Length: 374
Image (cartoon, rainbow, N blue to C red; front, side, top):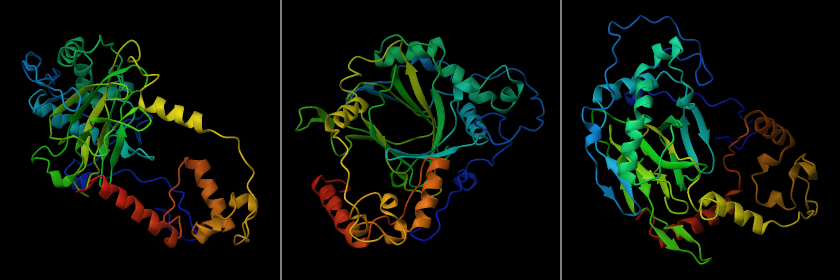
């Protein structure tokens, strides 16, 4: 967080360190856009025959489809070979994880695992089990199994997956996953292999039931209707449904138990029906378009803003709400420089305390009325 002082930190956030959380130390990462430095020499394995990633006979079993709050499947541990998943977990610790935070999520994420090239000897040497897992997930046999479970349309061989790490405070807010031709979402959990995931750690996958909104469009309920713990080796799948498949990742509450997963999507040849009208992204875009009004020139501030011109301040009366430190000209220049360099900046204590306090109390009262956190 940027303190309300004269300096704004413009340095990129350091990668998440998982040594204390039970992951193996970072090994030399891959020489690609998703890695930090060239891979060193690596001894050849004694065995050239790769062991299967899927457990024997795994695709012969069909876990039950849970219809509430919308159809989803939770395949318990045993679908994948445990030793193979432990090897994948170790390999993924060698990849650079980029910290990403918006108003929707806070997570460390690798690059697209589809970019790994089995023909590249450096990739094959560093991540053999990860590439084997990717191949198994997007094989024709596994895609046929996914269709049998979910009843979805035919799936293409498009690969779309990454490794996601939610550290303490990490979360993903409610959304329906509808983008392009996504057809089935999946999450394969690699967290805490030797102990059960505890509810006190947070990080559950939360599914939402729908309710009618005042505007006539359905919307997810304020509180989740089902929560699924990220147990090691378990896998959750659900069909992507515009305006219905709403889910979130609860905030991870443990500082040293990260939520680690490989997640992604199986794609169809075309977007799902209703994607242009009922998807959450489409609804937000429609609301924004409907409420757009012509820009109105605001009057100049009524008081000088500690060295900042009216143009730098940006709005009349801003000094009444904003922490005065952020209205100083040198701070405005530093904030602008960080936005240009990184595209994001966080400003701690942005509002004056007398402005922020009643807003926080109003938000807390609304949460209590909705029985959130009860």
